[in-house]
Length: 251
Image (cartoon, rainbow, N blue to C red; front, side, top):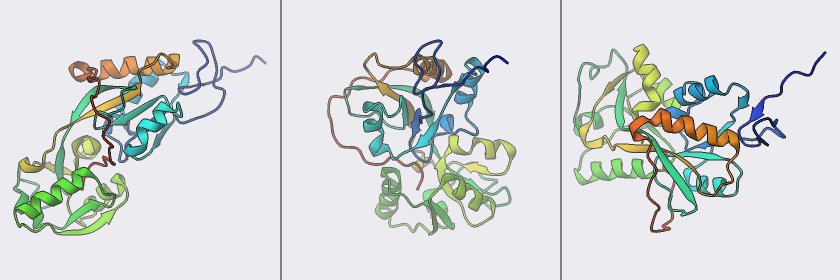
């Protein structure tokens, strides 16, 4: 019986006709993952697999503060972040735009509103992410500056857990819209705008500037740029090397 064709791994593809030498995580994402890179619901990954079905994509999540080092050390080929990394050895490509929205159950009193104020959101039982982040700090600082209450009663470690808690009626949550597109589309959750807290940001693919990318990684970048459309533009080379902290979205 002839040998069956072997899957190719994005991280270790030896060439156009090569096979995977070992199964390694190839793409890292900033947890919670921006919607384009969530493995179970990612249109970007789906588009790549449709064009390159023989290539295996391994996705793992690491803190954003470690992302640049992982990419530079070639532990992974590609990272996904919501900020432009300061390392000059890295190149980032914008593949989409995201913003924060308030997620509520369809039967919640705010579900019929197109937008609410910060004060109205703060009066609700709020479910937050328990990982410190600049986004969380900014939201808390804005409430402090307005001397307005923010009723955080539950903090959870995962994005999916927060969404499930909202669906169960345990509270409301301020999260990136892309992370909840599936629930919003199905009608499981309703999005409500909080104009003061929108915080639009760019979702970026990050890779090394050198020529060491594998064939598979280059193919992935090509699909990512097409997926991003007009937003898929290279970022300028950063002029500083200031340290960055975790960019976990949501509060």
